[in-house]
Structures are given as structure tokens and as C-alpha cells.
Image (cartoon, rainbow, N blue to C red; front, side, top):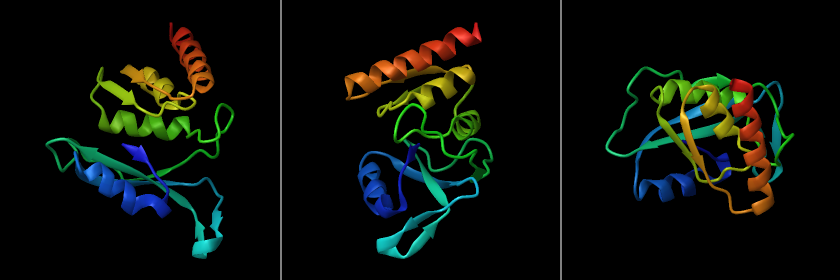
Length: 146
């Protein structure tokens, strides 16, 4: 799974399709807000979450492809995503106890969500300071679960 903006949808699908099979585009509705994309003349009210797989073109279980987001969460990182939507889609798409990998860790939302769902997690981040903050956030989440 990967978040992407609509402006880059074609490029992201093309890049991921080189090694993975496209499964579906899920939608997360913005919580009663919109982003004005001036150069496209669009009021954007949702964000896409692309799902790709290796050796599959469908979900193992029936999945709702629309989720009402809980709103903007930017306490830990400029590109932070909502924890509620991460938990929702991980529970729907990853087997219990499964491994979740986030190659663009950012604030660690996916790691926190994976731990909340009882899943294993591995993440990496290119920026050392961002990585430290994500490690701290994930460790705090882990200690709350114990």
C-alpha cells in the first residue's frame, strides 16, 4: 500500500507496476475539508491509497474501498498520515501477526498502527532526525501496549 497524490497517480502506478501487480485504489475522505489544487482547478476532498501485490490481483477478503479519515494529523511530521486510517486498512489487508514494512517511515504512523494491530513492523527513513523521532514514537506506543 502507498499513499499518493492524485497529481502523481499515473507516475506512481507506472513505477510500482514494474515489479508488482495493481490490485486497487482505496479512497480516504478528508474529514470535512478540502484542498484547493489551483493549477488543476480542483477542490480535492480525498486521498488515494494504492494497493499492489506480488502474485495477486485481488484481496483475500472483501474490503470497503472508502474510509472516512479522522482529519489532519501533523503533530510529528509534515507528511504524517492519520492513525485511524492506517489501523483500519492494516486490519483489513494484513494477516494477524503479519509483517508490515514501511520504506518511508516519516513520523512512524504505520509502525504505531501495526503494533496496535498486533503485527510485526520494520521501517526505514532517510533523514536521521526524523528516524529518531519515529523510533521514539513507536517505542512509546510499544510501552503503552505492555
